[in-house]
Image (tube, rainbow, N blue to C red; front, side, top):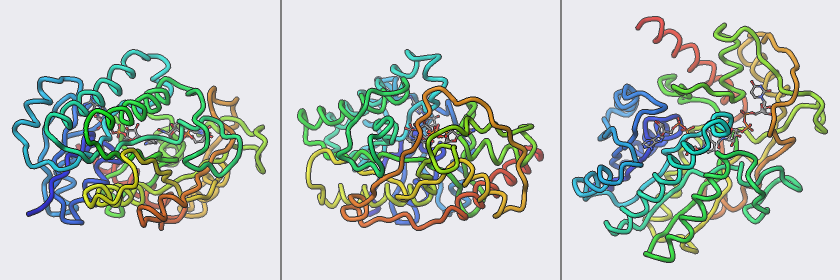
Length: 344
Ligand code: NAD
Ligand code: WQD
């Protein structure tokens, strides 16, 4: 019998890549998504890639009644990966209550159902944003959690605390994965980052400038105290990230966790500046980018990259894909996506 994993937010960017990896590891996948930032077409695309169509339900996790009904009808779920959330930092500052309501209420409703239905394994999507501007790099899981620089970041910090506390009420085993900067796309070129809501992340801005969707790439400041003046981040390929979720699920269902609430950083352990990413993109694709230096983006940190020793040791996982893989697959996805949109 295949083991069934519920993937909330499974038609989204990271969720869809994780669904593919779970299916390829012979898990059965059930997706819940309200499609607020993704398309139902992704379900068929996952089938195109894997040969298996995941079970899909359009449902808002904030709707407690509908969620309870779903769990009553789907008794085979043994573990949950909770991706569903609103994720735009800028938007969260303009719509704080929507972000608190969506991200926190959905998590509380989900935890309630886990308790009622005796499901004890949960993997949660957290973010390096909980560390704020670190005192030193690389950051370990023991580095201090700083007051969040955004409402979005605060929802991640609060949800981690709620999950930690929920494990006192019922026998929950949870892993919070703190992603650094997820980028890139599946090697098929069929799934990638295609938010319905506008995104202000660097890689989509680069590929959309290269494809002509944007006139120019704004580089948000070159006066940071870094080697080339632009901020440094730990970019990680989304397929590496997806594989870490499979490792986390296997750890939980194999009861190999050390404590009821574990946290792991997911990055490559290496930082790249904005200029290094732009150059890597141009070197890999041969496309020269039109960019201009603008003022700093409010809330941006100078530098952050991960210490991944815990994830390497405990999850038996390591990021294997290179910066070249990241920019190449992001570009292939942008080009494919444009072809598809033009054909529609
Ligand atoms: P995404 O927007 O592509 O996917 C999230 C999915 O959740 C979307 O399909 C959306 O429709 C769905 N969703 C949102 N609210 C929902 C609700 N109330 N009920 C049901 N579905 C809902 O985002 P992503 O990049 O795949 O991110 C996945 C998770 O990882 C999020 O929790 C995000 O905060 C976290 N994360 C993302 C990044 C990143 O840079 N992409 C970095 C760190 C953490
Ligand atoms: C990277 C660098 C920008 C766009 C965000 C969230 C974080 C996490 C990952 C969810 C920065 C620069 C960007 C552009 C630019 N998400 N940049 N021009 O800000 O590190 O992290 O996504 O959890 O919480 O805050 O990622 O990709 O937006 O920016 O110069 O058009 O690229 O200033 O230095 P960030 P990013």
